Image 1 (cartoon, rainbow, N blue to C red):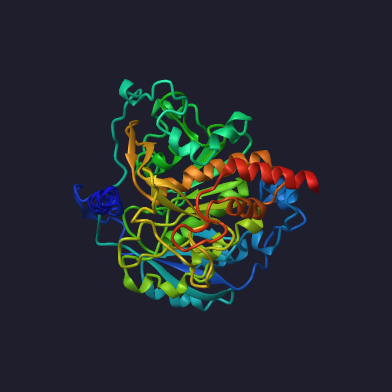
Image 2: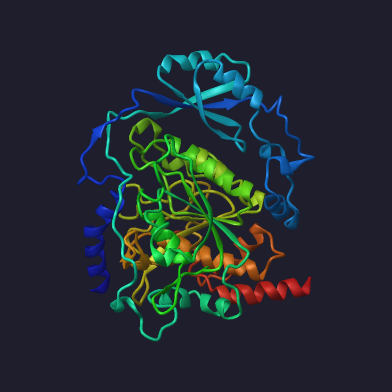
Length: 475
């Protein structure tokens, strides 16, 4: 009966959750900058670059270089920036270069006339092009001011429970035992790639969060990422907040970068480029982990949409980028997606990527079952997906109004785990990204018989730490 009631609740609430990109209550307005088009240009090589692999600190931060050295990972040609000579050559054709990917050696160009792409395709440095964005006729303005609470209400207090409303979500994963020995994410840097962080710069509860900086990779950039959707605010709260007896996140001592890649006004393939640019930035400033509560499969234009056969970690542009992260020494934690009750059902991209952690959602009430909306695996090439699960139906978090609330989605189960991955890695700093990923899988409660609904199951982070520590002492 409980499962039936939960399913009925989800049927009512998930349409709103899935349609969060489209606030229909707001009035649509004519798009001012159209008609225009964004193309992805694939470049043949990186000839003419002024950079050298012998001097990586000219294009990567010292922290980024040290992360590679610590894990004995090479800096290779994919790390070199796109050839500035090629960029100048493209710009001489009276087009705007609005983005670049060094890992995939591509640039984004914005055109007023789509026929201009033919001139660019003739350039000797260009191997191919792809249309990834078309200006819409109208949009719904998204950057809006919203009032917020200066403090939590007394009824939000959990009494004498130190972790407050987040207590169950942390203890279920044995995260509190990491915290008890001082593993709270200190010295770890986490990038949060999302669509906006409404009021995260103004809500008092977020003032103690160590936010290193923020960037907007969407074109054109928002007037403020802190006026966009509060989805990223909710995600950030599950990891970063430290409000005893009200709400404590899973990595309250970590440092955070807030990166916007999600365009709330359209749903088109260019967002995979924006995501890639954000991930590359996270790498360049030295982030250790990336939390991405984003996923893609269906776009506004059907010919851009992905097919199930493409879920192999190497076909979608964003998945190719995500599959490179572990080789750069970064752990990606990505939500599985909320398509379990729809016709797609499967994980989206980049949740299909190699060497990362894809997180599904389970119910908060015992006996804990998979949330009906949680996307399932496997990947097209037969890898177990999701990798792990935790509470996401519902999850306690703090929204853009500064209110502790319950919400549903793999978007919020992913950062709960991400914060504890940071704490685990803090305690096992000699481990490589790929080692930590394997250690977490091996210490999930479904590891001996993984499936494509629960994956390897729910992680035990204390067990992972103890086994990881023992392995290190034996070496």
